[in-house]
Amino acid sequence: MDKLLVGWREWLSLPNLNIAAIKAKIDTGARTSSLHAFSVEPYLARGAPMVCVKVHPYQNNTRYEISFDAEVVDRRWVSDSGGHKEKRYVIMATMTLGHHSWGSELTLTNRDTMKFRMLLGRTAMDGHLLVDPAASYLVGKRPRRVKHKVG
Image (cartoon, rainbow, N blue to C red):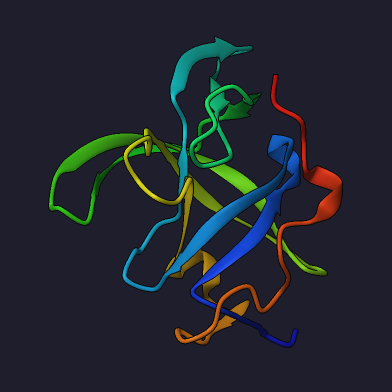
């Protein structure tokens, strides 16, 4: 498969999580990808660990939220950019950028104070993307069909 050239920030979708568009920082310094989740509630379904997750996919917009359920594939300690360690739930997500889609792990954490609601880490990029750190939105601007009214 040809690798997709991306900028340091891109709009992508997570179709299996019902997220049609989310702005992600393409972060080669981060090992694992992370998604903003303001609520993560664990539960068991037929013996399998699951989480019910609530996400505000757009920066500075807490009125629009998306909920989904996902199977937990792991819980692991993750260090943030400030060196703080946090035990996070890990789920699988389908990542779609342009016409390219692939599966990768995604950790769940509260990113309310961060500029980007998602970080796309280098493990998810491996074999799929090439990054031009001087460019933005090489795959395209926010898709028109996912704009929404608030209120």
